[in-house]
Image (cartoon, rainbow, N blue to C red; front, side, top):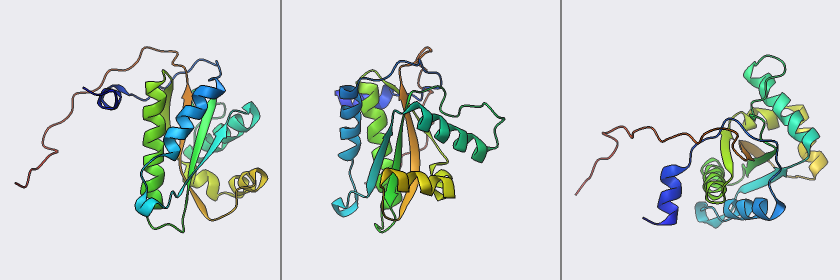
Length: 175
C-alpha cells in the first residue's frame, strides 16, 4: 500500500496535545501540502493563517468556545499549540470545497510528519464576527473570505485512536 493510502487509513483526530511547539520546518511542510490541494479550475481559493502566537491562539480558542456555548475556560483546541485557520475566497464558486480540500491535505501531511491534528469547526462564525473581521484586518487579509475550518496541530499527549470499522453500503457500482 502506498504511503498516501496508509496515511488516509491511519490518520485520526487528536483531542489532547502536548504544549511542545512544532518546528518551523515541519510546519512549513504541512502548510505547503495545504497550498497544493486540488481546487476548482485551479483558482486556489484557500488561504491559510498560521497561528503560533500564544496570545492570538488563546483568543481564537475563546471565540470558538463562546460560539459553541461552552463553559468559560473550555479550550476547543484541546491544548494544541498551533492553529492553521483556513479561509476561502467567496468570489470563487467552489470555495467551500476548495477550502475543505486544503483542510484534508493539512491533516494528512501532519499525520505523515508525526504531528497530530483535528478539524475544529465554527471558523465561519468566528470570522463573520466583528472581532474576527478585525483580526483579519490586523493581519492584512483583504477580500471576502469565509472561515472553512481551524486545523489544530501538535504532538499527541494520548494514545493514537484506532479507526472505527467502515460501515457497509456506501459504494454503488454502475458498470
